[in-house]
Amino acid sequence: MPGRYNFRPPWWHGRFRNNGYRITVARQAILDVLSKTDKHLSAEDIYFTVHKDYPNIGLTTIYRTLDLLVQIGLICKHDFGDGRARFELAEGPEGKAHHHHLVCTKCGCVIDYTDFVEEETELLKRIEEELSKKHNFNIIGHLIQFYGVCNDCR
Amino acid sequence: MPGRYNFRPPWWHGRFRNNGYRITVARQAILDVLSKTDKHLSAEDIYFTVHKDYPNIGLTTIYRTLDLLVQIGLICKHDFGDGRARFELAEGPEGKAHHHHLVCTKCGCVIDYTDFVEEETELLKRIEEELSKKHNFNIIGHLIQFYGVCNDCR
DNA sequence: CTAACTGCAAATTCTTTGCATTAGT
DNA sequence: ACTAATGCAAAGAATTTGCAGTTAG
Image (cartoon, rainbow over all chains, first blue to last red; front, side, top):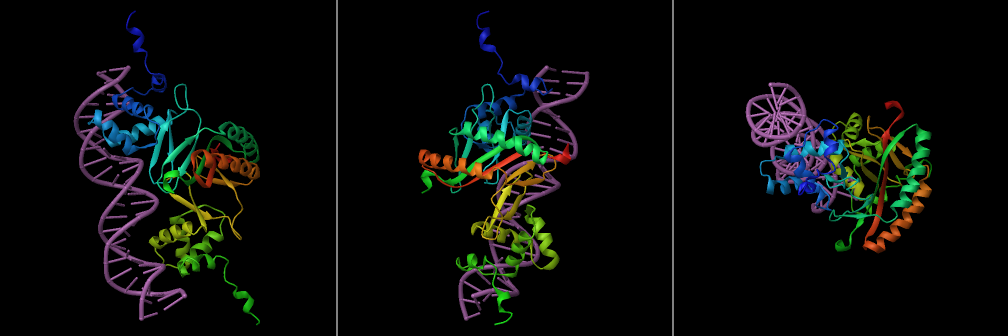
């Protein structure tokens, strides 16, 4: 079947279908943008990028799609303290590696780091276990961030 | 000088004076509210509480004061994902102990915990040291939060 | 007395919603 | 065809700003 092998659908198609969601141009475009960057984009950032190729896709759709993508676990929503939500591909088969963030409080730039993540995760696991028991809390996720001033800002 | 010893000014007066800021009724009232609660209050929460005793203090002043208090390090600003900023007294001579948060994603309640904070802090110090060097980043603070479902919500 | 602070109303900014239309499956 | 998804314009909600009047030091 020559030529056919190129048509393997993206790995995330199942995530949509299994939940009864449709695969639309807008959703593909947004996922495409997020797949091709290592930055942490805001809804508006994504809107402008998508807009170049698909000028008919509105900001509302961006917001609605981002909500959906967060819900089915394809992307993560972050708050770095600049008053707007920021998004990046979640960990996954073809997604990003587990990492945390270093946020510059001057310029707002964000550096991903993977150093110590294993150690962190190991400690987090123990903490989660203990806190779950103690507070009868069902822990699902965690957030670690460092704040400071980046190289360029000093 | 009988009676005089009661007039020792609150420990935070110096923080204002040293920075050229004035000590006003509004600022005292807001700090007072934050001193007397262990909850994480929003600007509006604080506004309503302050309003009972000082009906003439406006929401704008609350916002401006909170900004100031964050800047001089008397309080911390948090985001627990419910779309509004929340505030609590910072660590300090008479402030709270170092702690982190457990956030319920259903009802939004927040539990402070101090367990493991020493272990966390020890690890964080090592990470900070390493990341500072590696990324030439001047690390000032960190954020750790756990997300999950609280006892009441399940 | 003078600059810092405040209140009010209006403006901003990010995000959500209502509703008629379009497009996946 | 049938329903989910979309676009547009308008609504919402939290926070900020301009400006004239007030107050702490």
